Image: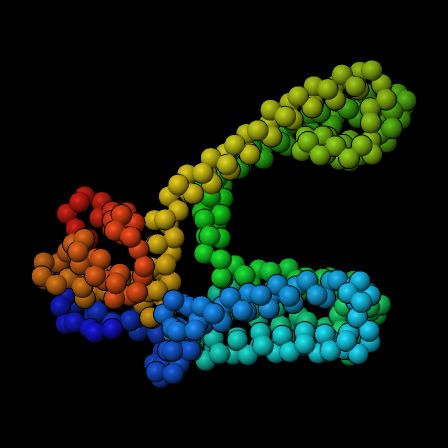
Length: 352
């Protein structure tokens, strides 16, 4: 990217350099290309194909170990070949992490990244467990001589590998945004739920205890029954035996239906508003990714805007902002680019 010596004319930005953050380490051209290839598939030729193929490999590595081999009709030789292929996938994931570390702009931030932590765990866990059991295979039907903790680590491998796909699903940011917007209402809803659970479980325990001919022998059992009913699941493992208990449970069922409509409605409305604004939010996320890929931190953004301030007035016009998107290779329709510009430009005078 061509750098300019111009500066924003405001006093808060006076003297700010239009260059990537000093926390970014010096990298060779090859390191930058490796980083862009892995981090932003739209910047490098062939990167999008690699990402799609790797996503299919991840899905295969999730499902194949949990499907019994006899169900697939595999013989011993074929099973060994599959185990060897899955071990090769572990090595591929390890190589990907090593390449990301090789090309990353900031090595300290590399280890604090949630996505990189998932990438590391996705090959560390299966490799460590295979060394522990001294076998290539961690198949579903294997009788593994491991402890409960080790078994938990083994069954967590598919979960971790599925989470690897979050890096490749742009729309996952919309779900995160929706839950973030709905998070403010959750404390009051949880308080109401606790109040309902303890009130109804207390009444049900008094009416349905074993001394009254009921089947609820303890308060925790009454809480379990109330929670199951309140969540509208209703396992049927416990049923009221007395007439008074039946009446109270009927009231609980009605209250449960009314209560559950509130959190579902709040989350649904939040997701609906986020979905309506998805084009702007995804474009903003694309911009953040592109800035990070080329080595810019949030504090570098004013200086980056100054770099595209062609008339030197200390403000970025809509045309200048659009040219910046084009040079950063961020694809956006005019109306979407305008929406993002408005997010920066609150008063309509230009981004300053």
